[in-house]
Length: 406
Image (tube, rainbow, N blue to C red; front, side, top):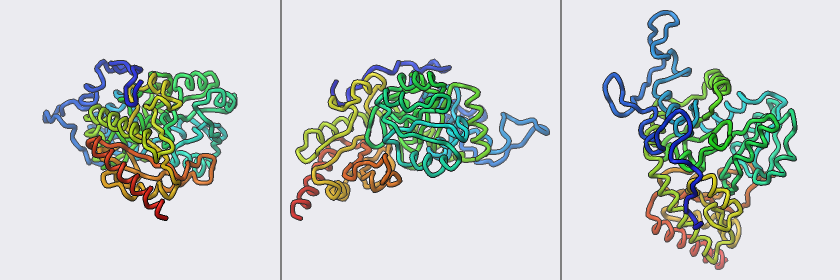
């Protein structure tokens, strides 16, 4: 299978209570015309409180905006539909979503397995926040099922936390196999699906118990909103998460919810371009004499390529690589791109470049999860692929020249 060529793991119709295909759901789920005015765009409801028809008699189920808001409810319906889940819950950030799920699913003294190359913010949440609450964690290579099996603590491991593809090393884990291992040990499987998006991968259909997103990224898609979400099928788990959502209050405002809803409508067409462009970029880097290593699951040489082709319908828009010459050259490449913007985050329409070890993943420096200091991460946008290739080529050539000149 060529770089960027999609697999066929995702069925044309989304599992769950919604009968339509993904592209239709992205436009319509939770976004029906407003019954009061006929507006085809979901209204932004900025109200903090809602009139009641009598004491305790809520009109349309809303009383106070921390507990619920019509714009947020539309987003939660949309996200549940896209992931093929029965309940979606929106949060103020991806990490707020992670925290709420973990507090709802785990108790002090419980044990969690996390990826050996987890996102730096996730590691920080476990190591600096939840560990003080009494939650124990073990990093493990989730692509090594024997290692996962050995790390499970019967009766104590409550959850396996999975990223696939991982950030920023783009490792691939077998969701169905991890679900089987988790359930056999009496644990849950949660999957951070931010890098893939529900357009490319649906973990609930593969056996996961919960899906988490930073909606800041591909779902929002325009680098103009921060948000997060959890999607589940089990009503009891959904209620526990909803309780934490209301009790701690880390909810998105109505305008933030509306921005994600707007982004969701174009998710399929954007992801098609992200996929296509990333495949071209990865192929160019793989052939470049000044690149030591390229990490992209669409390349046949990637160790998770075959698995990604089975459980994803495309390989995504993220590419990581290591240039010849070490950390100094990596930083120089980032300084010399003109179209790739040096910035954190990912998943927007514009292309971004960063050095994770000094930026998004600085929190794991010196830990077992530390990433190579010469690793460059690309979030490949939707610009013309030819222009992006030329931009990276000239940046690499100039960076290598600077290094050679001393």
